[in-house]
Image (cartoon, rainbow, N blue to C red; front, side, top):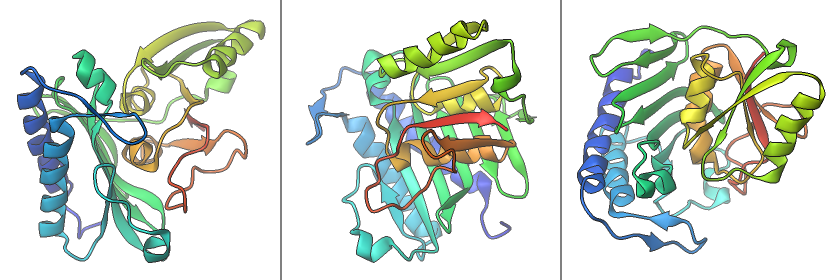
Length: 259
């Protein structure tokens, strides 16, 4: 990992976050993309900064971003290394102005995240992980806190479950009810964007079940943070590691936890 400077990637995320906050503090318009998901000027400005900066620093490493035209599977299926970027994760939270949105940048090697930065610009908080060094939370004053491996929720009597604020569905509620039927105490925490991964990684939540649609760029950076802190992200159906660079970049249902 010596060839990749995590400070440079953090700086890119922060620069993108500054552009996001300029739009956030104004009145802005919201467009709808083809899949009816919202798009703002902030998404586009953030994307332009991240993609241009990564290409300048690492011209030989391709970039997959939510806001960039998708590269055909035939062209990317044999990539050994690439960036996965969500320039503004949690656009619905951004529109609601609740501060729960992030910039996500992940470096993938052989379809596994080996570096990830999650930046919450409204909160001035950064979570990052890098292979060989572990995962950390960085506060607004620059202090770093190492993220340590937590307990497996399956063995806990009281379980803190974090789930989506804008995408809560019946399957997730059923997951919570099943825990209660087992006689366990459940504390339910709602949060937006990839912050849910970070809450598990820093021990503020025990498990993040995601039983709704997400894309690979939504999860890669958060997965890097939790995995490099000693956790895991598993396909809910197969109980295997969440896969990347699929022909269809839509994720299956998954669960983020400590082993």
